[in-house]
Amino acid sequence: AQKVTQAQTEISVVEKEDVTLDCVYETRDTTYYLFWYKQPPSGELVFLIRRNSFDEQNEISGRYSWNFQKSTSSFNFTITASQVVDSAVYFCALSATTSGTYKYIFGTGTRLKVLA
Amino acid sequence: SQTIHQWPATLVQPVGSPLSLECTVEGTSNPNLYWYRQAAGRGLQLLFYSVGIGQISSEVPQNLSASRPQDRQFILSSKKLLLSDSGFYLCAWAFSGTGGYSNQPQHFGDGTRLSIL
Image (cartoon, rainbow over all chains, first blue to last red; front, side, top):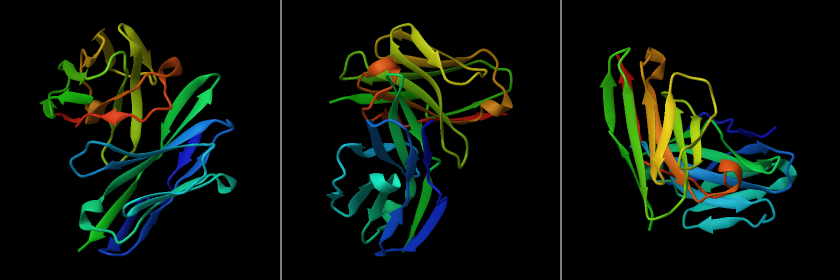
């Protein structure tokens, strides 16, 4: 069975601090995809990144970076020098095949509060 | 580029009244379409998905139904709303994949906040 765990329900940091959001996944499939989404207070989910299971290279996009480690089944998200605008709920998601059909599963989300 | 429109943004309905939420996508053909519900402070629950016109799959038994009368139109309905139907409803699309789910990112509408009185 596929599962995504975001153990951190809520995190508060002071502006300019670095923060890491954890995501642990479970799947028996060898081909799968991992995603991060941001949900600002306005409500819509915004796609941030997709990684496939064969690409363990870490990725950096501005202040955002992602650390994918298959050995620990983790796909963690780090925000460097956090800003108030980073305050949002962040969701990790997994898309993995089940008998040839990709199943899309979201974690329960981590609420990040960045304080000025 | 592709865009997704969802309306209304907010809705207040009495218990027992009908519901119709609409979602349309522009700029792509034959997308996969999804309806999610998010209870206050909670994660996303997939309600329905569709791989084509008239093709609807339900993920959980409930008081709601979905229809896809046109390629890029997805409608969420109820004949009689319950208090438990309150929540934030999100429509999403993705490029098509195998069996309705996809390894592609999903792109979400702005959502509808539904309050049942």
